[in-house]
Amino acid sequence: MATTATTWGSRIGFILAGAGSAIGLGSIWKFPFWAGINGGSGFIIPYIIFTFTIGITLLIAELVVGRAGRGSALHALKRLGGPAFSIMGGIAVLTSFVILSYYSVVGGWCVKYLFDSLGGTLVTNDPKVLQATFGALVGDGLTNSLWHLSFLTCGVVALGVVNGIERLSKYLLPTLFILMIVIMIRSLSLPGAMEGVKFLFDFSFDKLTWMSVLNAMGFTFFSLSLGCGIMVTYGAYLKDSTDIPNSSLWIAYLAIQTALLAGLMIMPAVFAMGQDPNAGPGLVFVTIPFIFSQIPFGWFFMILFNVCLLVAALTSSVSLLEVCIAYLQNEWHMKRISASILCYVGLALLGFVSALSFGVWSDVKIFDRIIFDFLDWFCSNIMMPLGGLSIALLAGWKAWNSTYVQVNLVKKYSASANAFIKFSLRFLAPLLVLVVVATGV
Ligand code: PFF
Image 1 (tube, rainbow, N blue to C red):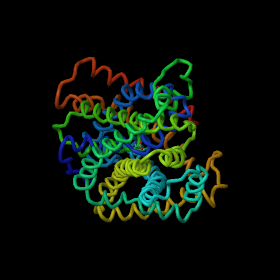
Image 2 (image 1 turned 180 degrees about the vertical axis):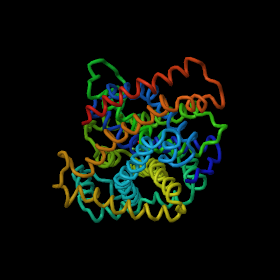
Image 3 (image 1 turned 90 degrees about the vertical axis):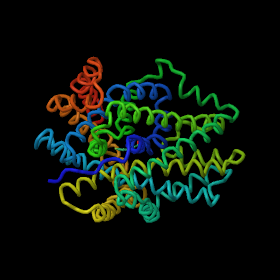
Image 4 (image 1 turned 45 degrees about the vertical axis):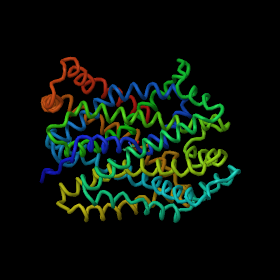
């Protein structure tokens, strides 16, 4: 079994690739509507707290396991933890493959919406037209699948870690931040926009419900790309001279900052235009185009917005795919190009199932959910938390000595920082993960 010799080109390149993974459809598509459904700050405040406590420690743990194990997620977990953990590594690879299959269906919607916004066809005064456009896209399995195929994650990953993933993130992520700030300023300049800001940040304890806290916990996993082998795989490409805790703080910070930016792009405009913050998944595909249709130069901001969505989706999906490619390279000795082609075919087939679940297969229900929703629910609420649990147990108990060495490799952290990481990995993270899984089930 070969170990990896590839390393990131630079530390900043790695941080941007890691942040690119974290910043995805989760931040721009899911975060605003989840914040809407869960009462704004009652969701946001716990999300920030979870990210800077167990989120960051699990992120550190995944990167540590990757660098100490130097290989695919399966290889790294096996090397550090033995056969039982290698099963969890295998499950992580499978989880990222399944997530990518439905994630890239939404990626396909982003490609289509970018084309539509460039063609000006999303500008309309009638919200029903937008509802119908979105309904027609998701409801038609064939169109849905063709757009899914146009979402070319595999092309980027085939170019390699440094030339493909790192380069993509280095150029696109800063562009994403700039575009988001421009849209946020436009949104905040609308009359009545402050209501949206209040909705997001005005905190009172009655907004805090058991459900909003649990959802925030699950979202922390999704948003930091934890529990499905991504950060383990990225960690395997880290040089020994990269400070893991410090880089993790940067990634977590950038993830939170982007989610908040997304909230501040969307909610002020939603409130200013008297729309429903509770609109669910259609928020960015129906409500947002409608809002931009109503404001001067809205068509231009609509294009920028759809570029943001697509960039975020792409930098994340390459990270999900890299988990599978590293596995195929490591365990099956495949060349990167052939592994990428194989995954493209596999994802096209599995994605087809998700794509059809909105249309002709919408009657097929698993646990009362269509296939797309079931896969999302199962991966986010069961598989990813379980992946996180196994990393916590491995890094916190079984391989704590390696964790300690890796954490302090570049700079010796204080005893209290080390004690916090240890406590969080040993007790806090497992406990919270179990609560999330139990409630999920
Ligand atoms: N963290 C990214 C997002 O929030 O969209 C990408 C992602 C990675 C999503 C892993 C889900 C996941 F399981």
